[in-house]
Figure 1 (tube, helix red, strand yellow):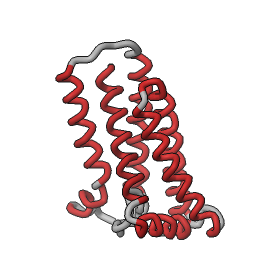
Figure 2 (cartoon, rainbow, N blue to C red):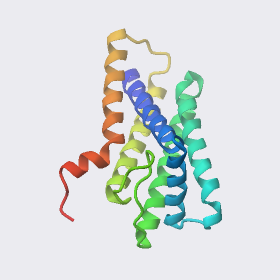
Figure 3 (cartoon, rainbow, N blue to C red):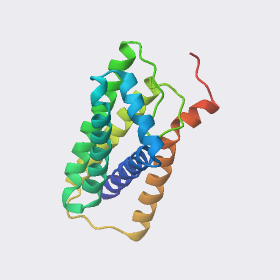
Figure 4 (cartoon, rainbow, N blue to C red):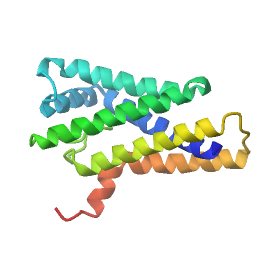
Length: 176
């Protein structure tokens, strides 16, 4: 169970690091993220900058919580809450006919937020649930260097697939 928790922890941390960096640097990426939030019309336009800042801050806090052994469980819980919020926001915007490009990992994406993004966030939320359960079940467990390497590589590959999802889906377009 330890390695499942470690893989989940690393995967989520890497995904949220990519999200924070992608939205924060360069400055244009943050401006594009603010514009995307504004276009979603989930709250008054004047709050878009504050919502964008709060989102990036919450993602950064999630990374920090997952990085510190004493706060890993809180990190999983915050990750679940964030991902649930993202799912609700996407579904709400889509339900009102809003088609806004995904700026989940910064500027450059042209794929509108939709069902693939909901599924991705739901899958990440499941990873957080599994990580929390595994962390709880393996409290005080020991590790082997080979297992840690395998968990790390698995998490890194998973994070790349998650972050590059829109590009991968563009290679094999689904029937619309």
